[in-house]
Image (cartoon, rainbow, N blue to C red; front, side, top):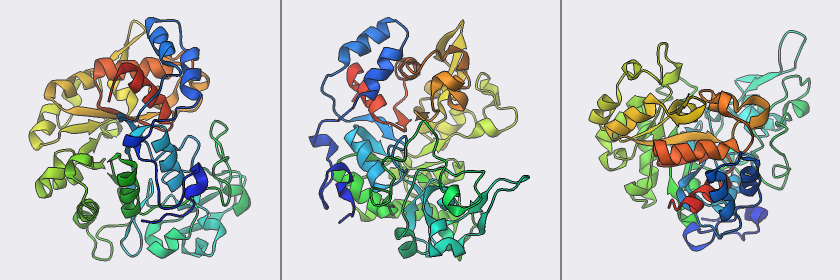
Length: 406
């Protein structure tokens, strides 16, 4: 497989960093976060690990690559995540007009994650760009399902952002949060979009495992005869075609029917299918009350679900100001369901918003940027998660290496 723009990280075309053969490069951020922590035995332990050699860990999951600073789901973002020791990489999977699978967080995010509005393909957008007015924000909606694979590959990825006050397309394409950067998203410097098949080949070369997420389509299914079951099957078929063993793949979906499809129709892959738990959106769902979990953890396990993946906050709560496992986490462990969680480094400055949504159950315990390690330690040692999605994988890789987590 030949990729373009691999020089973005000093790699030559046709070669990729192989995680199993090269040390992880962590940079200064983990040390910065440790120094921000409150004084504690944990801080002392982590501080003693600063500067130690590091290697990749399957505990570290690159969330769309390394999108804290690199355009998500791009070659450059995935390469950055591998350099930082992500032992598992994620491609969110959707499809194009010609039913080819590509890596995008959602089928309709092209207006904010690529340069489509600045190209001739802007005419394919289901909702063309509209300028901001006194009453309305600037907006646009562009879908992968409206363009072919060849057209998709002609686009350039950018940091996921838009300017709601924009009156021109040029201004709309801006808006990157001030705690992120466009340093690696400039024209010609990055933003190489990826097909799902290309991501598989890249991750194979990197020596990492795979966690593709089957995204819910924005279009009505079936799409031109392409059913939801066809979509779920095609995702698995691309791993089989590439000779990837099922034991290296953790297919994900927020929709239990997709997970159950894999369990029934592709049982080897289904063993590691991950139910992304979005039930917090359901009225009455309460992480402190297992009777509100429908289906229950025991019922999920009986269905064949062996992995579950909720947001960070669902797994923890506060007990006299101390971060502890939630009833939800305890129930999953009691049922024998393994846990992944998302997403570290996606909240901006913790000191500005107490961690925001991702830390909502423990906002009152967030004291500094270093609180990320206080939470991560509870997730690893007490909740016993199997892996953590991160927008900056080095943060998790540092912790995993210091604690001896492979």
